[in-house]
Image (tube, rainbow over all chains, first blue to last red):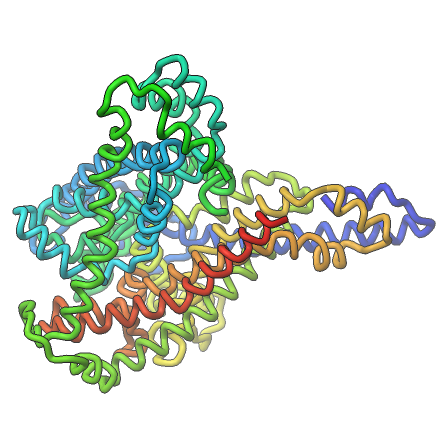
Length: 300
Length: 308
């Protein structure tokens, strides 16, 4: 921005300035290129090694162009590899994570939208205080909640189940989703709601007919935030579930630490990729809207 | 700012049904109760456990601050707490610096902006477990960066930071920066774009060069974003757990233990629930030290804006 307008201010020493400009551009691209290599290195390593065979990796190292091609590791990682005593690959934990993440994302987003709607358009005495209290949940470290959750999950019979994790993630996600939606809905003109009320529309009708159609930008942010956050979460997964109930993050750690012999980089690369693909896909399709929405409403 | 008109909405002149006025409150009640339990009851619960003689199972016999004394007498906890401060300082400052540098570079009308942005932002989508695992491989001497450099013939090149007691903490810092600086970059970039162009033009007319414009005009106006990002990163830092588990397992030895990891160990591996709860409360204290001043600052700033 600054740079472009400077071009207009042509001075007598235009040629020297031009040279300096070219040098500046090269420096900028070199800088970005340098960081891009570091940022892309892990992705390249994981993708490349998921298709190489282990002897070749051991011989040439992880950072090398593939000289072998094999899909064997994918099959192993998905359905045969032994993690924590069971030899059925990471497919079960992948499905566990899906079964956990999708409902938890949908429920917490829906509740957040309704809460945000109430807290911005149907304020009542004490609703601002309520909002402040709910926002505090954003900052609570999970460690504070571990023992109480363990107790409550035991009480309602959801210990070591995916449903227990869904429950925990919904409650814990409420603070985020409510915060995001409330901050966004504040910018919907009150007159719009008032007009609908005069026309006789009630609470739910206004929500579905006016607020929800205006919501896609913030719902995209909320869904991306919740999906990636819940999919990638490890602490609750490892504490509240074990064995066959574990989500994929816990299984990936078990797969890494269970190794006594040479590290099976080929299978581990596949496993790690399988664990990273769902949130990556979400980002590649929604990342643009995510940043836009985040700066519009969520962080102010 | 919107409270006056919406107060009218909450009490409409002609409610069609007596229940209608209560709908909003009834609708939000379950979430409100859940949040109250989650935020306050859980904190008080854990606080009480931290003052009890719980060991393998929770017990509610009050013993005062004894668990805290035992916690602070422990060498591993002291290392964990000092690691937290060391890590947080470097991680937050460097992630902000890298994020800002990348944002400024991208802001120079570079070609393929969307591609650069995606490259720097994608690590944010990936879990700390995956990030930690992959960087652990890259730092390991048997196949990673050391192996790579040696394959060019520099046979005594050594780079095995995760095996060194002094260097391992830097791998956590570097990996954390790799994961989060894109987040800082994206928000800074949005901030740079939202600076009032007239302000920049005015500075140019006054003869200010690009460096000066950035320092005196642009950076001050994105200060609120800067602080918001810093706070978000700081609370990531305090909650750091999975990254350490996947990257160094807290080692070598206990060199890279973090409070979150120690809490987990105490509660679920060693059956010292009271001390674990005390450690969790200390984490909450660390968070409060960061967040209370921030909350005060934002309130003060919004008042000032409201007052004109």
